[in-house]
Amino acid sequence: MPPSSSEHAFSVAGMVPPLTGLQFRVAVLLIGLGNFLSVLDTTIANVSVPTIAGSVGVSSTQGTWVITSYAVAEAITVPLTGFLTKRIGAKRLFVGCYIAFGLISLGCGLSSSLGMLLFFRVLLGISGGPLCPLSQTLLLELYPREKATQANVLWSVTTLIGPVIGPILGGIICDDYGWPWIFYIKVPIAAIGGLVLLVLFRGQPDPTEKASVDRIGLLLLIIWVAALQILLDNGRNVDWFASPEIQILAVVSAVGFVAFIIWELTDPNPIVDLRIYRYLGFTVPAFTLVVGFGAFFASLVLLPLWLQTNMGYTATWAGYATGIMGILSLTMAPLAGKMAEKIDPRLVVCFGLLGLASIHIWRMSFNPEVTFLQMAWPTFFTGPFLVMFIVPVTGLCMKAVPPEKRPTAAGMANFMRALASSFAVSLIQTGWSDAIRTNQTELAGAMKHNYGVISGLIHSGAHLNEAVAGLTMILEEQSVMLATLNMFGAIALVFLAGAVLIWFCPKISLAPHPGHSSDDNLSMEGISRD
Image (cartoon, rainbow, N blue to C red; front, side, top):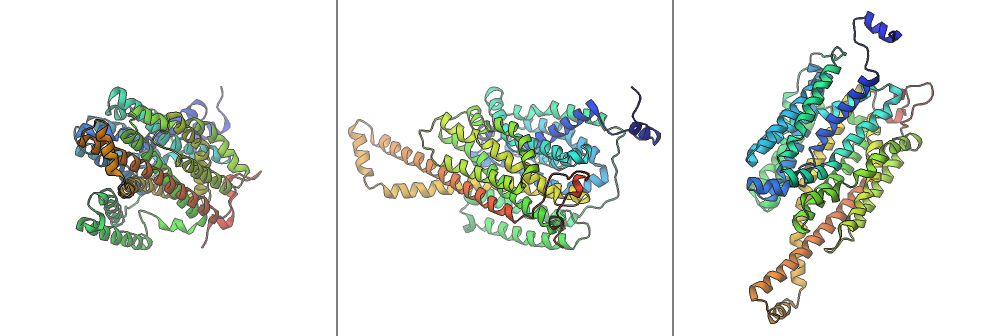
C-alpha cells in the first residue's frame, strides 16, 4: 500500500508518523492498562489486609498502612510529574515508570516483614504516581482533538474499574494463592506492557526542556502530607490530642501546610501550580472529584473490612460483594460520555452523586442477618451512578483550562484524588472505631436487665464466664453493626454535599461545535476568573 500524504510528509522531514491502525490501538490499550495497574494497586490489597497483617504479625489497623503508604507516596509523586516530563519526556517517563512498577511489585511480594513491605509499597507509589496523569495526557495526545471525549472516557473507565476490580482480584488471589501473588501477578504485565510501548514510541516526538525542581516546595509537601497522614493513622490509638505525639504532628502539618501554600504561590516554578485554581471551571469539578472519590474509596475500605472481621466472609467473598459494581460500570461508561455531550455535564455528575448517596442510604437497612444477595444488590446498582460521576467530572476538569494548561490540570486533579484516597482510609477507620466504642457504651448503659439475662443463661446450663462472654459478644456485634450503618450514613451525606458543590461550576459544554475543535468550545466564564 503506498504511503499517505501525511506519512510521506513525515518521512521527508525525517520523523516517524503518528501511530495509526493496529499500532494506535495497541498503544492506547497499553497506556490504559498502565493507568489501570496504578489505580488497581490502591484497592487490590484492601480485602487482603487481615491476611497480610496476620502473616507479618501485626494488627489489622497496622495492616492498613499497606494501603495508606502507597496512596501517600503516589499523592506526593504526582506533582513531580510535570518536572520529570520536561526533563525526561512524557513517553520515556511513562515507559520507565511502567517497567519499574513491575519490578517493585516483585519486591512487595517477597517482603517478609511489615517494614519491608511498607518500604516497597512507598517505592511502588512513587513509580505509580506519574502513570495516572501521564496516561491521560498521552491518550489526549494520541487521539484527534475531535475525539477527546473518547480519550477521557477510556481514561475514566480504567481509573474507575481499577478500584472496583481490585477487591475481587485481591480476594481470589489471596485465598487461593497467597497474598504475595497480588503483587507477583503485576510483574509480567507491567514489564511486557512497558517494553511493547518502548518499541511503539521509538522515534515518536518526545520533547524535553531544561527544568528545575522546586526542592523547598517538595520538602514542605512531604512534611505536611506525611505528618497529617501519620496523625490520622495513629490518632485513634493514642487518644488523639491527649498525646504529645499527636499534638506535635498537628502543629507540624498545620505549619507545613501554610508554609507550603505561601511558598508555592510566590515561587516562579512551583512543584504544585496553585495558580490553576484561578480557573473556577477546574476548581469546582476538582473538589467535587475529591469529595465524591474520597467517599467512594471510604466505602471500598469499610465494606470488605466489616464483612471479613465481623460477618465471617473470606477475602474472596468480600471481594465479590465489593467488586460486583464493575459489571454495570463497564457497560455504562461509553453511555455516560455521550450523556455528558448531550446534557449539561453538571446535571449528569449531580445525578450520579445523588444515586451514590441513595445506595448508601439503602445500605443503612442492613442488619446482622443480611444475606449476600441482599447486600449485593446495592453494590450492583452502584456501577451506573459511579460512571455518571467519574466520567463527566473528569472531562470538566480538563475542558475548563486552555490546552497548554491541561498537563497541569491532570496532575493537580490526580494529586487531589490520590490525597483524598489516603485520607479517606484513615478517616473512615477512625470514624468506624469511634462509633463502635460509643455504641457499645450506650448499649451497655441501656441494658437495664443484663443481670437477668446472665442469670437466665446460667439457669439454662451455661457457666458464668460463658454467659458473660455471650452477652459481651452480642453487644459487640450490635455495636459494630450500628457503627457500620453510621458510616454508611456519613458517606451518604458526603455524596450529597458533592451533588450540591458541582453546581458552583460554570456551564461548560464538552461537545465540539461543527467546524470547531473541541478546544475552541469553551465558555469564557469557565476558562478564567482573572
